[in-house]
Image (tube, rainbow, N blue to C red; front, top):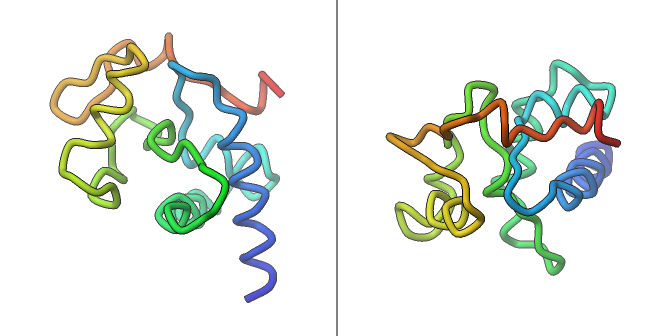
Length: 110
């Protein structure tokens, strides 16, 4: 399990860099880490992040279409959406509006 722990740590490091009011995708983080096919593992890392001491803004990580696919991992049904909206991101029917404008790509930003 050591390898996945290490990968998860790298995922959290990137996720902690996502600026307030911006979002990225599981796939963009995977690609940045040189593991383009590991989007699902990035998802698992996000699902697991609630148990960490140092906070990870998992609400800022969505699927490649801007859909809040991880929302059921947050306590309270709409917590993920509320956190995003508190940062000024508009969400309609679990989908981020103006996704391209608020999208933060670690591959170009870091």
